[in-house]
Length: 160
Image 1: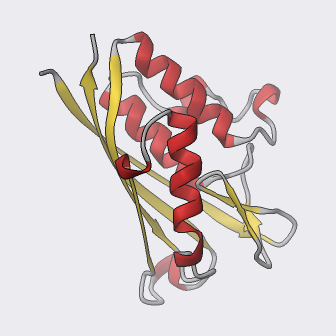
Image 2: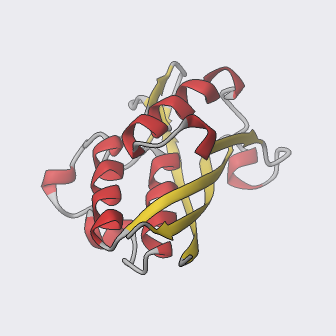
């Protein structure tokens, strides 16, 4: 079996004038994240992990933040297109292990909805999408509540 692993990382800064989207789910909060798209830091890290595992470069290469067609785009569309790129090389996602690092908001109540959303977009089972939330113990930019970071590891396998 031909298997590969990939790692993705992304960060976005908070902004009071934006909505907060994580894992394809809108989360009610006093601030959102700044970005060219909807700034879904979890989906961006997931896309980077998938693209890296398949040796398809990175999210910025395929979905440039200088291209107006991606301005305010729903990141679920980027994930769907990333999965098309992955499948065009004959690979399928085995599983994703995701960690969101944020001091606030509390994410535990939203994890199942994020898993369901991502599984639907990817066309896999919820069991293949692990999402964990942690803090940075009040250290660094996350600890100062300036933004959110996400880390993702994926396993892909040759499906044909």
